[in-house]
Image 1 (cartoon, rainbow, N blue to C red):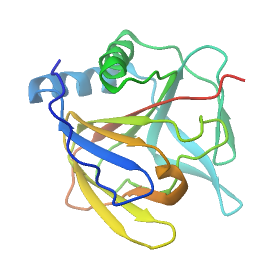
Image 2 (image 1 turned 90 degrees about the vertical axis):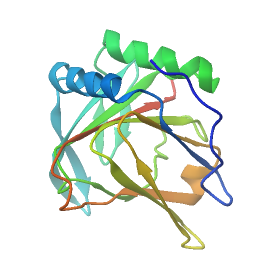
Image 3 (image 1 turned 45 degrees about the vertical axis):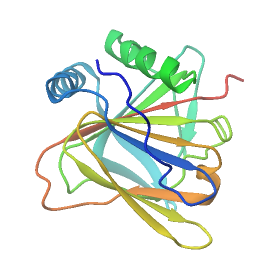
Length: 200
């Protein structure tokens, strides 16, 4: 596994931090991690409530975490699956370098560019307020957008295979983020978002 280089500057002009470290794994490493995640994780379609309707998403998800945690979002409460050896290894790679501690990981599998994520904030009450979220991306390169809730400023970045994006500070209070759809993308992407959940 690769080490971090000097981190790039904050993508956001104010009200939080979004730092795209770029690829922190070589392409062979990233491809191997993708293949292992794709085959080993018990992926399931996500069921969420939007505008009063229950919707089953095309993308698939899995939530991994410490015992006793629960995660409430979009009208559903999830109980964590146990950590795999690969996810524990990835977590132990991130934590000392970021100076953070994570107790859960939400995984998303986007089969191609027809699947994405609309504007949202990761500010559910079960997440520790203003805590750091570390997102690892494997597979297809995808655009990622930020939009300020007041000024409507738009910031975009590219999430490459094996890359790390870190969101910290007050970003979830002041900025929305989204993964836009693209018909040009025909291959899958897996994202891992390591989080700090409240324990009580």
